[in-house]
Length: 262
Ligand code: JD8
Image 1 (cartoon, rainbow, N blue to C red):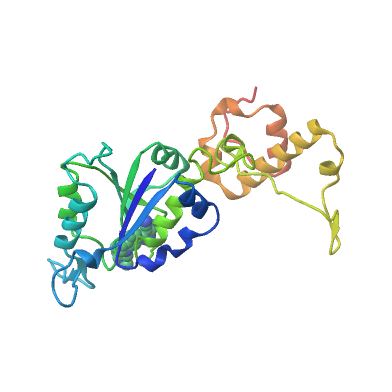
Image 2 (image 1 turned 90 degrees about the horizontal axis):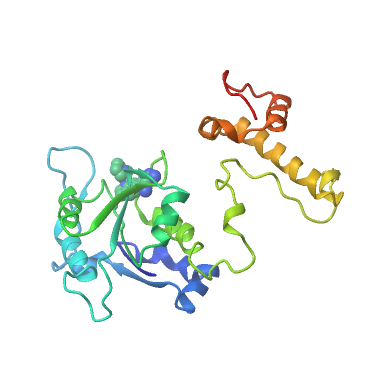
């Protein structure tokens, strides 16, 4: 996969040299380039912002440098390697929520182009013009306020890169993770069996794989009920069996009336 990032803070992306993403870059799974938006300015001050039309606080990113950057990184002419046009992703608090499902969708693309805004954001005409020839997605990490898109891109790239073939290796299996089965994960433990007076639950040392699986599901249900009402509400009605309902009852969770467990 090819990834281009445009930002006024290219130094933000130094961590992408490290760890598993760094290895994916070294072995060619990920061809990543970070670009300084100011390299597409022409004035002596390398200006990228101006005051907002309509008034209000702060500054808005001017369209001209962005237009030139997107022309350079997503040219209309097919490049010699015949690649298709990139998907343009623009982090914004007003975007669609980034999810694991979107991470899977993005991992199937051949070229992603990230535009990192700062200040009060990017002049809307940049996105409107890009949308006349590219697939443009404004994406949000969640309902809190960041200074700019850089950290969002780091998060999205980490979620996407680990889904690329060969990045995870044998260490992890993608279908067993949180959100794949609609529940939070049960807690994990390793050695020693006793640490500072805290014991690893006996069941996990029993070697009884049936009991362990049941215990983990009970813990996952209790945690999800306590922490994630949104995930509880989204559970398919037929996904809970009688033992699940008993575990939720022990955890003090009231199932909505009408839900009949199989
Ligand atoms: C991009 C500028 C800051 C945006 C005023 C201060 C994502 N989940 C998220 N929260 N915030 C962002 C985000 C914030 C950004 C930019 C992403 C560019 N800002 C601005 C408008 C209102 N603030 C985000 N993804």
